Length: 429
Ligand code: UDX
Image 1 (cartoon, helix red, strand yellow):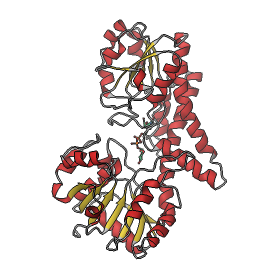
Image 2 (cartoon, rainbow, N blue to C red):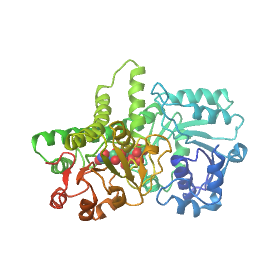
Image 3 (cartoon, rainbow, N blue to C red):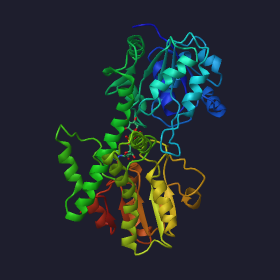
Image 4 (tube, protein in one colour):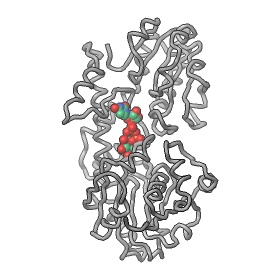
């Protein structure tokens, strides 16, 4: 095993923290730098600002090799590799906003002891070439450049990092590729080396294809409703074809999160900028938008009107096992319900919704049962396992009307109907 490298990680968000902790676990000396004083103070006191299983233990177990700082010089002191893990949120045009990336790159000026700069942030194809120019202008022409996109899913990011399906390295020269490959020694997965532009594209294409699978099964679910087929049976059998695979065929109220919405829009805009309209991806995004509106429409059809109705939202995060509310379908559902004049009550074990609209107009409850009290309808928005454990017989008794839209097909339709519920799922008869 080669001796540990000195790595400076820029950005202490989901990706930076997981990357920093995992590289420390692999034996490297890591300094994570962030510009947010509160976040750095929290990390220094041994706390982790996000919920990610295994991350806290890994950070705690690698104290000697992992530190956090606000100070640029401290981060760069002796660093051989700079890993850029800052966020690239959508800008007004839908293109990724790369301002944080450029700020980090400018700050590297004078760090002539660096051997390589690596961008892990998701960026438009072609960004690497601009990074190269920026490095040259910063007097770092001798420093290698690599793109190393991440494919970790929230809630299992540490495991995904240590046991990935693949590590993708896009590099302009062999030395940089070898260095980054060596940095991953101990990671249990194949390393794929390619040119920078292709590596940038792999990330966007992978996320777009995963989103496509979900939108596809969601459209099939709609058709199942119209034809009397059961999408759960259909998805199970379709997924047994090894060419298609069982993953990302779970129908629901649509995909959200920090990656799919942002990356699919960024890929669509990237195409538009070249004068090509990505037709398939545009439809995938449209299906996803519609999926949330259809959920509200179903309730409206059932209740006659939503005005004055009390609706309980069970689960707010974009998926279970995370506290992340970014692009969560629940936000669209809540604001549509409020726009229709409904009263919204909610429950979630982890979510930290923004204090702003629509959440400021909803009431939050400690348990699903409390949220369901007096409700005219409930929507299962996120498939938290706690929802299965609800005493649904009791819920049917305390709800004003036992109307349930199971947006994740989490519950058993027959048993719910037996309890007196008007049960609606996604693509189930
Ligand atoms: C995703 C990718 O999986 C990961 O590789 C990438 O690096 C970042 O984006 P993440 O956003 O954490 O990860 O969540 P993921 O578990 O992939 O789910 C994304 C969304 O799709 C969620 O809203 C989830 O509820 C939804 N989903 C997923 C479905 O509706 N059906 C499915 O079958 C799978």
